[in-house]
Image (cartoon, rainbow, N blue to C red; front, side, top):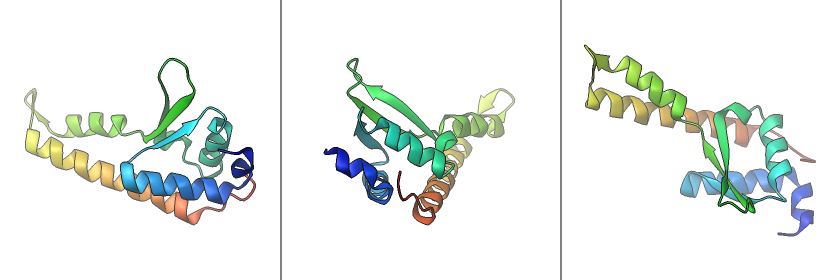
Length: 116
């Protein structure tokens, strides 16, 4: 990617949206990292994602919705007498992921990020 791509926040936002819709994650380079971070902060999305390096070289990173807290919540809701109700848990996880993705897309598609 050329650095000129980084100056357009709307273009970056569009790439993130497309990747999330197609794959559920976004892979980017270390050069793009500060721009992705700025985008997440500007749209108040930082707490809804986790970013991890892909490999030890830290040349590429992956941006994924952070669903771990929701799975813990589902486990707590669906536990009865020390046993997790699997059907309840799976339905809860599916609902929570759907709610999280809806919130993410609402903020991504509704927010303006020119100059990111």
